[in-house]
Amino acid sequence: MPARINPSILSADFVNMERDLDRIGTADYVHVDVMDNHFVPNLTFGPQMVERIQAVSPIPLDVHLMIDDPDRWAPGYAELGAFSVTFHAEAAADSVALARRLREIGARAGIALKPGTAVEPYLEILGEFDQVLVMTVEPGFGGQRFIADVMPKLDALHAERARTGLDVWLQVDGGVTVDTIRIAAEHGADTFVAGSSVFGAPDADAAIVELRAAAAQHLH
Ligand code: DX5
Ligand code: ZN
Image (cartoon, rainbow, N blue to C red):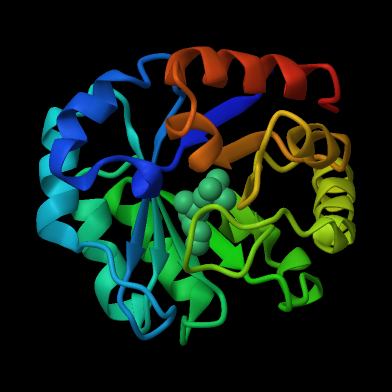
């Protein structure tokens, strides 16, 4: 299985979104960061904008919700047709019920963990999720440094996946570059979000190809 590379449009030009989507034709999924200025100290956009991106993007959307009360808001993103909807464990009142609802609507259900959040409680309910997002920066902003200290969480998820045979994708997000992607792949990640290292490159598509190749050498 090749590494999945999901460019984060947080680093795209917000007034030229359609043009920037054209720069990432080789992406596997388009990573869409929704921020509400409450769960994180930054604000991006909501369902109306994501619906427009969904309408114009030939590549399916991987929505990352950095918002309070995802129990209330996340299903709407599944309903507008997102391929996957990932909410934060720290924000959800009932992670299992919410994941089941997202699957029922037809999206893949993802759960995200901030760097300080322990993974153990989620190992025993891993089958409820299609994706676990291990944050490698504090959520809120692009362009931060990769936190390698969270790699033991990936090790634990990877071991549990191997033990159970579950088909759950292990995603990392934050500070992913051609160097740090190798570290995450070695620890079991298979799905990689990259914002500044893709959109900051002169040739975004070439950067995606390079990231995928770097990860491939270290994939499990
Ligand atoms: C951070 C977002 C990321 C961000 C990553 O809170 O969830 O998706 O765009 O940006 P880079 O790759 O620049 O760290
Ligand atoms: Zn993200």
